[in-house]
Amino acid sequence: MKVRVRFAPSPTGPLHIGGVRTALYNYLFAKQHGGDMLLRIEDTDSNRFVPGAENYIIEALQWLGIGIDEGVGVGGPHAPYRQSERKHLYRQYVDQLLDAGLAYIAFDTPAELDGKRAEIPNFQYDARTRGDMCNSLTLPAEEVKARIDRGDQYVVRIKIEPDESITVNDLIRGEVTINSSILDDKVLFKSADGLPTYHLANVVDDYLMEITHVIRGEEWLPSAPLHVILYRYLGWSDRMPRFAHLPLLLKPDGNGKLSKRDGDRLGFPVFPLNWKDPKSGETSSGYREAGYFPEAVVNFLALLGWNPGTDEEILSMQQLIEQFNLEKVSKSGARFDYEKGKWFNHKYLQMKSDEEVADLFQHILVEKGIIEDSQKVTRIVSLVKERANFITDLWEQSSFFFQAPAAYDEKTVQKRWKADSPAQMQELADVLAGIDDFSPEHTEEVVKAWIESKGYGLGAVMNAFRLSVVGAAKGPHMFDITAILGKEETIARLKRAVETLG
Ligand code: GLU
Image (cartoon, rainbow, N blue to C red; front, side):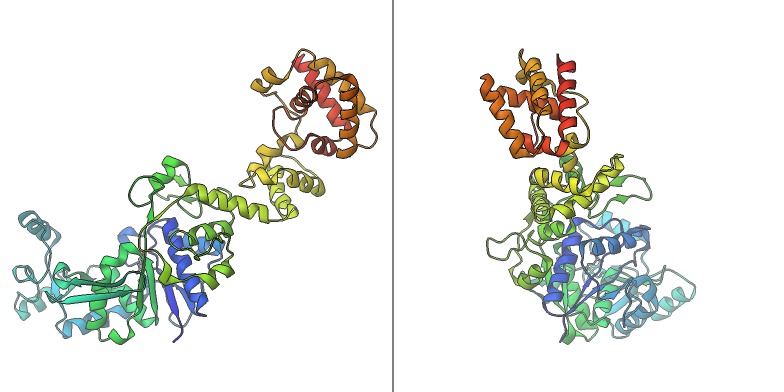
């Protein structure tokens, strides 16, 4: 049987990074088995619908290279893939359950339910309490009909038989057995909007869309026994998908689930792309805009909760597809190590060619109004790339190639600009003026010979030289810098330093 998995987000806001990992694991599993990855939008809860969320999800998956074979935005044999557009499909299964006595109609108003909750501690609508409630099990059939005919609102609840063992067979957790008495008679359908709830729509669609594996976050594990019962009630047990509930992503520090607040507190994104909340107008930062490469994010996320069992950490999408093993996903939560995320981006940046990095860096230069020759930018990149985690770091590492220092780093001046520095730098400018071949090797040879002939301290001269040209005690090899700046600019900077620092 062909493997078919689905990513089934609810469009209630931006996709959390944990949701991205769920999508990725679904994708890796599907592609490893030559199967299909579906995207289904679960939007039956209109109260929680957020405009823009669906497009955000699609854009995020595209950015990361998580390809969708079938579903929203792509189409396919089971279209539509948005649950709100599948309304007409669910009613017959509600009726089937009602006719078989496996579900019932309930009229209890929200106020009545609240009353019960206040009256009975830990109230739950189930086999023990349903006989005291206002529903088709307690009211005469004529009254039920009369109420429906006059337009009273109702819900349809599943009728859970108490004291049965319900087993969920989970590919990650093994067999999880619970007693059905802990389950409540969950609402499956609401007459108010004519829509099924999450549970019914999710199960019906997994069945109709011929899903073979349900891979989703751990927070859905408590729903799984109910889904197993629904499969049985609908007569579909032999077509029940295999379940795999993924471990939580944990806070970088302390206990509990990774949240947006952790990101704000510790300064890292928890969303794939920037998200502007349509109500508050508040923007949350995303990995894409923070300068991450999608390959790095994919690699980082894939290893949160799974590893290939080797020391290999840098894995391409193709390698991940080959090596991923759902059964080796850990049961316990995966701590979100943001520094590791940066490390991955650093590695991916180093793997790119200087030309490719230079092309990306050019965008930043252009934004700053700097138009520079590609070959020159490529040479600069080759000198500073190693020190960068992100393309944006390149500016901090190399701005002095494009702009003469506007100021000199205070501390460095105090430490490295000595009484004899002005005279020495003036002299150095004259030495440089006499050099024709400004290649790093030749310039270095001439300058060092001059220093030696004068008996100057090599360190002292070179430190003052760097301060004059760069404005601080940083940057690559000094003579690589001067070769790129050229003779004229290097001399001009020396003179300006002498004038400014005295
Ligand atoms: N709509 C659910 C969510 O937002 C889907 C859970 C599932 O995959 O079954 O995560």
